[in-house]
Length: 122
Length: 182
Picture (spheres, rainbow over the protein chains, first blue to last red):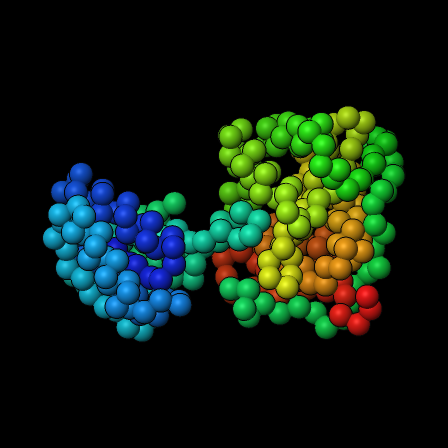
């Protein structure tokens, strides 16, 4: 399957990266990693790219890395739909101090708008 | 997310702090007390959440298996968190908690199914806010599913205002103090 993985600056994003890379190796997925410039938070896009490369190297996986500017959710959906991806994967949001699961605005947009399957990593 | 959270300008309350005793809508004698940190009260809460109907979960809490319930309880019953429990004798019927989040606190409340719609939630909420105000908490927020109109109505009646209606869950906030009194 052709999978488009959206990665931002959150810890949950790194966890999603790790799990998705492991899954891609096991399933033979064709992975493209999209670094979401809009939601890098306190990190820089270059830092995130270094993490992505390290994760890919650790699993000996080849994957295209792209930087996406503008609205993260709408860009992910439009790339996935126009370029024939089978699915979009991204972190499923954060948890509040209480432990409540909170959907990020990116995840919410993708869920409500994507015509391709969406996987949220928890 | 918490960076652009808005709180009402006016202070709500005052709310009566625990202990609070009352007869609920089903004629049961209920007492609301602050959590005392004992194993007995901890275990009573763990049993309450073990019995909790999964359909009444909110955004993943309470968790559904015992190990996760205990991890979650360890998190919200420790540190600077404030907890009140509604007791029907030895049975924990409801629980409300304030978890610190920067200069504010996040609130959650749960009432066991057999004790719902008897006025316990409102009393529990007020007792927690009274306990919070007494402990120096000034700003409180919560999230609620937007379709859960009974809950939204209850929170509004108590003094919560909608602070963010743009995200998936609706956010509401209340002010308990304005930093002027000590």
